[in-house]
Image (cartoon, rainbow, N blue to C red; front, side):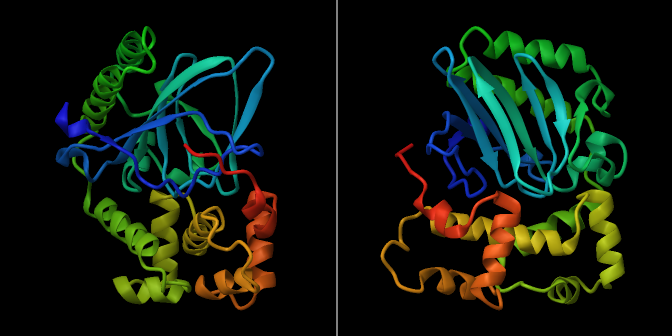
Length: 282
């Protein structure tokens, strides 16, 4: 299963719970034939003592997720705010973080209809859903921490997604647009995205509504918040006078107050409080 090799990218989106806890999340790369459809696969596995629970917080990327677990199988649409998941007992999930192009292919329609929604997998455009879900559960259920089983389950999801067909030209374009915003920290205005791709603002808005379910402004704000969370939890700001103002300026905010409002509106906490949260080693 070399095409599904284990990876451990820096996960800017995952904020942990208020105690700094996060269950193990095993991540796997995609083979070349899936590059236009899937960003990566991820498999969280948890086992909490009786009576204990955790609420995991995620600043999600602008994509849909295909998830199959021991008790659910769904497509989760992009979440405009902070995504939260309550975990207790023991469990696991095999997930595919899709490329922006793949959401509408999997849903069979505009992604805007699934924004902030969870769609049962059986209503998606996939064929053979019952067999797919049963196959993933047979593989992972008996040994949720087994990496070889994870890879085989990821391969099952990958083959099912390939059956959706090749990505169309519009899908390839939206992949490039989202990648550009995520990788270019100098992009702080929608007009910059329009200029980079020769699109009017109205055309860009319609494209992202169909294929991503979000606005161009949202893409830019979320990239900034991902960068902010990464810097705040790194510990590099400790003891530095004016450090939060520096972060705000580096991310293109007019002032620290604007940055603080954006961060608190989405995460529910201030940048300073987030930086002070416990950060135990993975």
